[in-house]
Length: 158
Image (cartoon, rainbow, N blue to C red; front, side):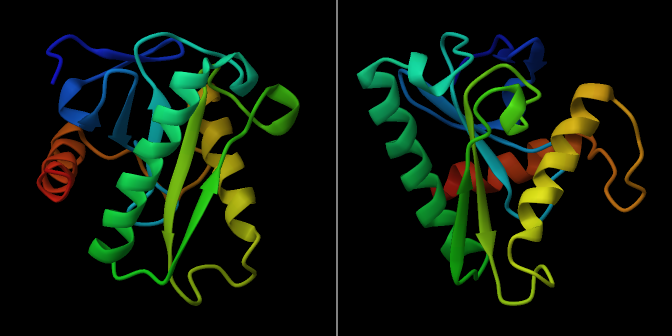
């Protein structure tokens, strides 16, 4: 695991928040998850703004990373389904210009209407960009909370 901060667009990510790495991608815990277990799987070692700009190897690695993380998360969080989302470009709601996949373990009733999750993810992305605390229900988690969660997930992916 790298000791230097990872980058996520213009943001520096503490290595303690990263729980899985490959030669081309990494998975990290989320600052403001919309549901327990929400993580991000990203193309890591170079900043790629749009999905179509990933190399074939990066695309394969990113999705294999998402598959590995998701399989463990679904079991760990006792979920029955998974949501994978990519917001590719500003008009699609992407606020951090770095390709990333949201991986969300899902349970019955976690949202009143199933598709409300996309609005919740979009709201979280806007908050991250604006650094506003307009959502009183979801607060930034401390670096200690994120590091502890990442450590639990690292053990799952050994």
